[in-house]
Structure formats: C-alpha cells, structure tokens
Image (tube, rainbow, N blue to C red; front, side, top):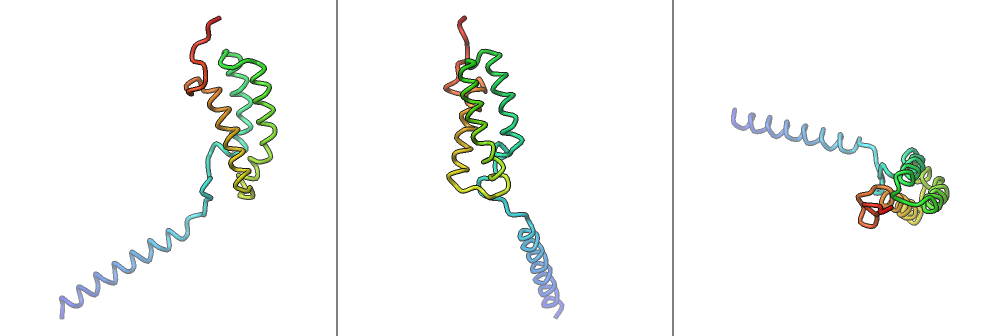
Length: 119
C-alpha cells in the first residue's frame, strides 16, 4: 500500500505544479502580436533626433530629412493608437513602414543607406 500512496502523492504533486503553471500562464498580460518597442510614442518621437543626426553626419540630405520628418509627423497619432491597442492592422503596417524607412535611412548600416560620402 505504500507504493500506491507514494504514487498518489507524486501524481497529486504533479497536478498541483501543472495547475500552478497554467494559472501563472493565464495571469500573464496579453500583448498584441505587433507589440514592438519601435512602435511606441517615445520611439517615434525620438526619430526626429535620429533624422537630424543623420543629416548632420551626411548620411542623408537635408531635403530627405525634411521629407522624413513630415512622414514621422503624419504617423505620430498612429503610434499612440498602436501603443494603446486601438490601431487597425493597416495603421500598424503604415507605422511600421515609416519607422522602418527612417531606421534604414538613418542607421548607416542599412542596405540602401550610403556608407561613405564622397565630397
């Protein structure tokens, strides 16, 4: 009978641990599939600095910087909507496209960004 009691205790412990794991997993906050740190309002607001810095360093022209700033201004309200979970899928894609474009043009490591400027 001791083997049966031991087996029952192991089974009860396993169920208790499994139940705790399920409860813990259910307690995690839900995050949308498009939860991206680059789509937050603070990141989008910081893109203006990135654009200015890239123009000062010669990675992009000042005309390109002006156009990029206009694009960032146009999607700033979308960043708030994405961050609060109120954005539609097309709004998320539009914001991602602008952020990706600014990141690729200002990083210096992107495929389409010039690495060396010949003055």
